[in-house]
Length: 252
Ligand SMILES: Nc1ncnc2c1ncn2[C@@H]1O[C@H](COP(=O)(O)OP(=O)(O)OP(=O)(O)O)[C@@H](O)[C@H]1O
Ligand SMILES: [Mg+2]
Image (cartoon, rainbow, N blue to C red; front, side, top):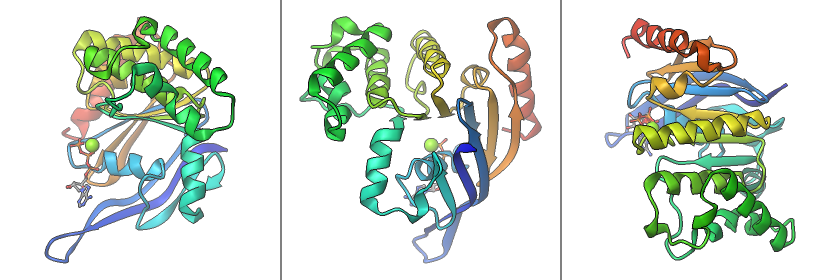
């Protein structure tokens, strides 16, 4: 069974003239548990719209979405919010941390919101995650005192605090320099090696080559869906070529 599945998903935005703008035109996508999928495509092709629908932050105009076997199209807002909090982690291009809280307090906040465990346990897990990501010494730092890469790592810790089955990211390396982006990629490799499913939107072929599978969205449709298999650094040149060929075949 797929852990994340979109079936015949469409999304229309009503334009200023009242004429509907169809942004997703029937997307079918089934992600298997433990898979790392990179979603690529030109600006405006509907990538963010698709991620928002997959993660239940937005509703499709038609079609359905299931997460861990639950049809989220039929859920109430309350049930959907609970599912999002516990089963999905979301990483944005810029991590939207709260400026009034320390990094550690930001990381543990979704754990407190879930309210399923004693706070001490959540804090211990938050510290362990930050340690894993190489930012343990920044636990008490202010959001404004750290680098973009460190902030993004904290954003990933926050997304993982409730041990989600699925981590979804919308260009999480997009605002970083290449050294910081490479660190995030190593972290994502570790996340997926624990069995977490990862779905990432990226413009960067260097990010996409790490994925098991690359899905290309053009004009609201999946036009390519290529399985690369498990990443091995030794074969990265070959994979880079496969991703570049995929993009140039579609003129992206
Ligand atoms: N809330 C909205 N209202 C109206 N139109 C929208 C809305 N959100 C997105 N769109 C339109 O939908 C299309 C797809 O947008 P989307 O943000 O999904 O693209 P994207 O592939 O993520 O692009 P980028 O690579 O630039 O982030 C665009 O034409 C955009 O203008
Ligand atoms: Mg986008």
